[in-house]
Length: 254
Image 1 (tube, helix red, strand yellow):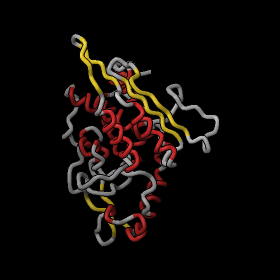
Image 2 (cartoon, helix red, strand yellow; image 1 turned 60 degrees about the vertical axis):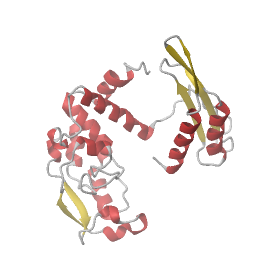
Image 3 (tube, rainbow, N blue to C red; image 1 turned 45 degrees about the vertical axis):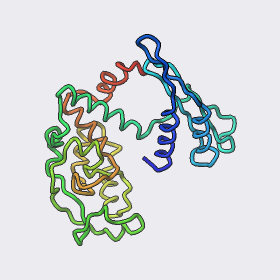
């Protein structure tokens, strides 16, 4: 999460922490005591130019809206209304959905957080790790000095990649643009977005090295994509079907 998004989330937490709860029989009703405080948080990040718009909405367990507010930079988006009916891409928030599916599978005993990824994706059994010619981890190079990490050499992964490593972004997967030309060219050759199905995607990813040894540290990338592939292999179902069965239908999300 970026520092700005973390600040927004933290500010919301502080503001919502001041909620007042009143008990009626066996039920609790949550009310926002100072909605203007939340409004100010949302407005600030739009007015200061951090984001072109923000739409915030809080619901209780019954789906009742207890807070809703939006702010739009009218200079960037004139005559634009952002509300609950606006279609907004969730981008990497989809990672939370995939992780929720996997944790549900863990609760049902279908897989374990400590399971090796190769148990479900044997194609990843012998994945190697890219390091510099000097044997230095690529993650030690800052963005302004990543060309110095090339050329690369491949070494064996010194630990067993687990499901938990995928959840924590510690498995060693990465996005197409790493800043290392010698690594980015390998990713470009595989052209992952054009894979026709999950098996083809796995085959292409199996030809690429990891950017670090599994479990060594946090490195944001396609770890959650692989997590979804693990869920598919563990259940024999498409991830979209798993999301429907375990998230959207039970939560009545349309």
